[in-house]
Image 1 (tube, rainbow, N blue to C red):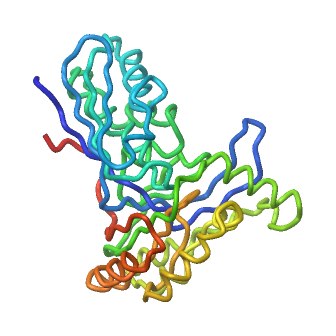
Image 2 (spheres, one colour):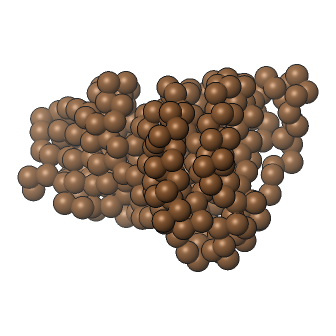
Length: 302
């Protein structure tokens, strides 16, 4: 085999409820993931030892060494399967880095699928999902794709039925935000009494019902993100970005995950195209992308 090419999607959290800090340093989550049509691609070729290169969106800030989740995924699969960790790995990014879209997790999921094929480990999807959970909270969903309800750290997934596609415009406002910093700000704001303690996780049922109905206005009403307030606290201009999205005609807008991406919900595909054009010209976002979801998770494309 001369090489394997796998793509994996970005995600939007259409619901994210965050509990208090747990003893293990994580927060208990109740989240609804939606995989959207913005993809990174990982190519795996035979090699001696591991080598990694990164090109595309944000390549200058993505490490190309063993601190990258792709490298860690290769070492983890190698150890689990008892095969040498020999591969040349190339990441081609279109998912912006540190944007709350799980680009690093998508890369790791794609690497697991690509190396399973390259090395002939014959791991099933359930086996790969176990390894994915060891790599990061979002990696199992990047592997699965579609729509899923996430529990625990987000790694325990239950598939969710979505009756129709939804259309979104993703606007990245400013430079990346550190996920640990946003969670830390949430804890600070809660300790100061400025936000609810989070002992009762926000229910996901309204979003699940809206996804089943396929009615955009119902989904717009149900969107929720406990990390939006701390992200706004750290990056005040996100408030302007959210207002710009709704002023331009979005049915609703929220910060995706820990930000700084704003996910603006459109009522249909033509509305998404118009919304993307309006936001691209507004000067609020450095990157604007029209996407749809759900889409499949990490899969072979070559």
